[in-house]
Length: 342
Image (cartoon, rainbow, N blue to C red; front, side):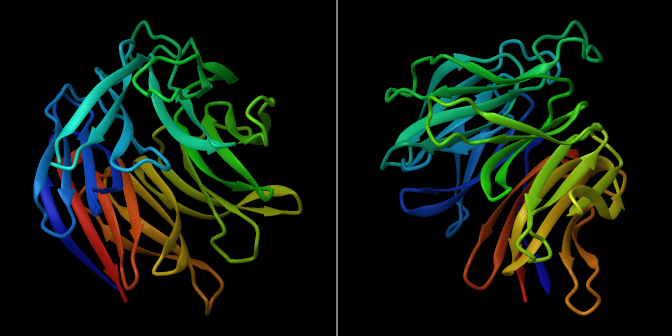
């Protein structure tokens, strides 16, 4: 396996990542959580363009399903732990590669969100880090998970409905499968919760608690190809352990653990068509590791993608003969693109 760093560009406090098609070509998008820009890079030419010059404070960039050249993102999540004025914006690129950014609404402390389609309607699901803060270390007002139907005119505000409440340090968020159902996994001090997508948008969301101890970030994938999903976590909050869990006799049991400092990245999917988890830490060794099941030993092994960057988030693009990882290496202020080949 060959890992090649194809691209590197400085960006202070690089944080949010996305890979999407813009005017028929693959673009890599990265935005800062500090005060500054969101930047797009064309895969074919590496030409750089500003999506916006500021204000920054971007936690997420989420392409809109079924719509070309459009995404929703957060802005003004600054300072990170005093983000009462954080908002979501709608971004759209025209045929001349010019971006138009329109504010949608303020959602205080919105830390993670996604956009999904249900019964041909667009919905937003978002998790707030907390409901309010008096200081950086104040966690007395737990966060919530909200759902809202997005109106046809995306730049107009919409009504948020809470579907899960009381999650302290509400940090982990991912979409996947659990019990053969579409699910969003939410994690915080109280543990990990599965929110099952309803069949109809008017139905109540079912929830299930999967773990009952503090989890910072989470991903889900079938890493051993046995037809049952495993969980990968970072524990505790921004914690020191990357753990992979397997369901054995109805209980989630740790089957692998790796030490980190300030763990922050957890991703599940396929790398070179092999089931994988990617877990990374922002400090210490600043490792970004890929974990896979070894076919010969039946044990989980890993290879290191990089140990210099300290990534905050990644996005992955599976291609025909290679895979590409876009990393926001926050701790060294770098946008990096890695290509993985056999």
